[in-house]
Structures are given as structure tokens and as C-alpha cells.
Length: 253
Ligand SMILES: [Zn+2]
Image 1 (cartoon, rainbow, N blue to C red):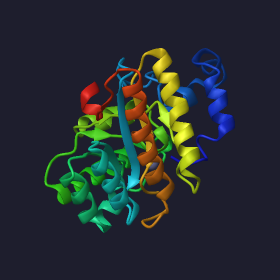
Image 2: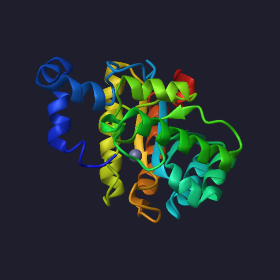
Image 3: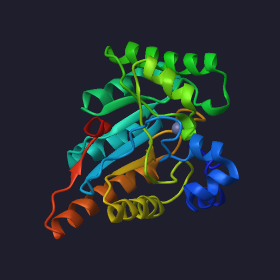
């Protein structure tokens, strides 16, 4: 994700509703709006407001991926990491540490292009090369894919499926791909969580343990927000007499 494709104004425009936006520019809606199914089936979230999937994009990233693993281990929460292939090639040991901690790992392309505007040959290479990087690092096939910036079109999803991957989008955003505060990230995710809960849906939270610009991006705000969010959710569910469940997209296929 970057601010470029989802500036607040653009997001607000899309939030006016599918009908209005389809009239104004259906291609942008179908290809970029995270919950759109127009260009093909994507996993978003099940109809179960007690389930939460924490997903982290753009890693592996030294040192914040390791910091995040500590926080998730402290809370015994399993999460999902959509990794950029070129960073996996640079730091395969971080990818292996994520897998060894029991988390789910998915493909986020080799170099994070907006696939919506790339030819099919590039799409296939981007996804295929990332699969190869992950499989070389982990020794097992990858099953999950998140398109960079959420950008897709029917053939992007078809190519992903041909390469053995199920596409995954999201329905809550941390807006944490640039430096911000843990409080702001927490508030952004909780806004999406409350919206999903009102509609009866699980939350699929988009966060970032890395950044497409390179390894070494500061994501301490995301790590701290994760700690606060998990503690808050556990208390919130307990106060309602409910049992919350932290899941991965495997629960929703
Ligand atoms: Zn990304």
C-alpha cells in the first residue's frame, strides 16, 4: 500500500458506494477497492464478527518484523505476512523465523508494482518470482497472494490462481505505511473493526511490518499498535462475554 493509491480523498470517494463510483469510474472501483469482487473472487472476511485476522505486508523487514514476532508470541496470536520477494531474497532468515513462529506467509510480488497497469507477462513474472523466492527460503509451496496496492483485474487473479494462489484483500486499514503513531494506527483499525462488527463481518486488518522502499523502514508504530490492539480486543470480547478468535485467511476460504 501507499498513500498514492488510497489518499483520504480517493478513499472517501470510493466509500460513497459502489453504484455511484461505478458510474464515475467502474474500473478503478473494481480494480482497487479492497472489498470489490467484480474482477474475481477474493478472500476478504467471513460473516463472523468475533474473528480477526491480523495481516502484515511489505516485509520481511529488519528489525521490526522480529519485534512484531515478539509481540505476537507474547499474546499467542497467529498472523499472516504477505512478503515482497526481493526482500525475501535479501533476508531469507527473517522469512524462516516468521514461518518457524507458526504464522502464515503469502506472496506480495517480487518488487511491489501496481499490477493493474502491467502486462500479463510482467504479472506472471512478478508473482512467479516471488513464489520461487518464498519456496527457496521456506521449502514449502505458497498458497496465498495479496496484490500490491490492492490492484488487480481478472487476468491478475487468474494468473495468481494458475500459480496456486488464493487472492486475499482486507476490510480494515491501519494507514501505517509511513511514520505515524501507535494511537493513530490503532484508531484506524478500530474504525474498520466497528464497521465490520455492525455489518456482522470478521475483520481482516491490513498492517505493514515493512515498506516497499527497502529493508530498514521504521514500523515501530505498527508493532506498538499491534500490542495495544490485541490487548484491547481481548478485554473487549471478555467484557461482552464473547470469545474472540485470531485467525488467518485459511479460516475463510
Ligand atoms: Zn504492499
